[in-house]
Length: 314
Picture 1 (cartoon, helix red, strand yellow):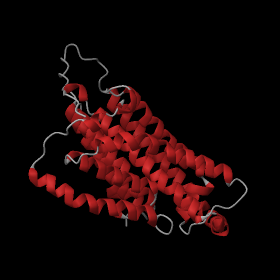
Picture 2 (picture 1 turned 30 degrees about the vertical axis):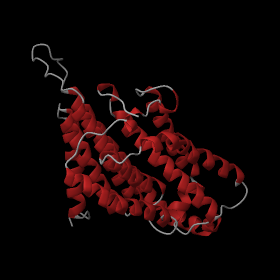
Picture 3 (picture 1 turned 180 degrees about the horizontal axis):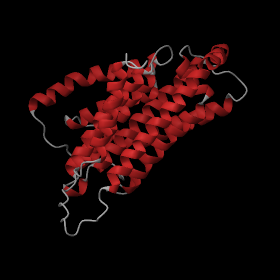
């Protein structure tokens, strides 16, 4: 202990600041992406130290996993930019990392202040939450809060991901009609070693079961739609990389599943404005949101590829 703060928390805080510097200071896109990947891992540990297992799982799966992997993919696939000549470089190139670092420090300080202020109100919040958990139809408090008491937040997060996927599909290269924007699903994936090919086929079912467990565990323990959707998206990416033929299936199911969760969530909320939720209703919402999240993340991954560089096969 140092001044009332555990040494592990001081090390973790210093690591967060160092990872922010590693993200904003380098000029290389790949180095920035790797810095962000490290930041996601440390942020996950920070949420675990705060006791927020659900948020830590979401950060590990989406923020530190899928998002960072996509950024690394983009940095590797994008053409390298030539280093600017010292004579022609802008005079204020140092300003960007300084502003980024100060912004990160400000966000950390503000978040810490908000957390300390909220921690003083937690007993009152816990009492109100415990008294009204019967209206949610689930046993886990965080799931009840996200799906019932603060369903607007969850709905908007799902809607943002859906609209992002719709935007990348609309801007993606491809034919018109049902295949528009999904040429990446129909194009052959780059070759991979045979050992990795079979390893993916072995571990994909295990990851699929883990994603299902996270979905159904959310009603009584840490888990839920966002964590499960991120894992199921990872399964789809692995199967696509292992040359499992998913193209025609993706074209037929991705768009309907993408919007189904948000639409059903809105209809369920309107139908239960003055009535308590039931477990079957919340389970249906969770399943459709999980599929929509997996579809949205997978659509973004597919649209990152540039099928114009190779022949599109059907």
